[in-house]
Length: 285
Image (cartoon, rainbow, N blue to C red; front, top):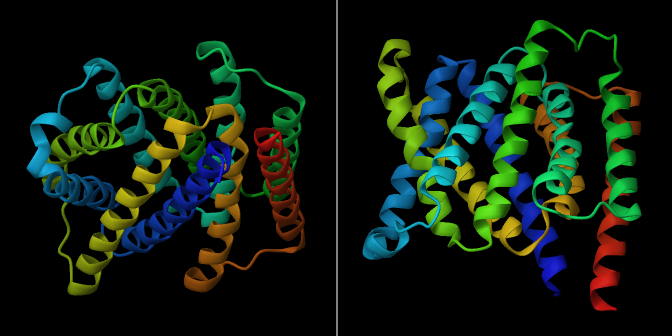
């Protein structure tokens, strides 16, 4: 596989596990407070990463960008918190569709701050995918409740995180970025969660463990994808998460998509396949 194809495959894998994490967080939020779900995502991931890198902690902990690593952690923590609060109150597919405005923000941000070019293929992929998301959202519908502002805020936070990750990932180990990503959120949220703690049962505890695993795997795959692929090129594939979110919503929450959701999903899938094909063909040439 070319570097471009690898980056795209890693990105799709990351989005799959992100969607699984979101579905797990929605279930946890229906059992206990949403703050506990966010805490479980960070505390579990920080513990897993720390144990994995412990034999080489001294090397992994060295970073050339301490302030940017802190900024990454802050952006992702706000993005995760905003989105978890959103999906606790509106449908998983609807919240994901609103957050799927972030590829547009990422592509524009990559052009402004990272010097990446916006070619016609990328522009088409972004535009087509955004049209698909808008078909699902259908502005003016009941999706636009006050809770819809949470995934919108998550989109901006997640976009900033992606852009900084792309910049840092050119010179840092993925494990270094992952360590700092989880560490700050785990420490801060561990100070906050006692004020929001509700008793948990064994099922909820197991879900929290799954949340940590899904979050860690998705984060590692995303960091690796952004270290070898341009943020603007990878941005359209974030829309694949809408497909995964729709599937999880159907299976676990009885949230069945209507006709226009299916149409929008097809537009998103086809645009993603088009960009994949054109980018990988160009790389081979």
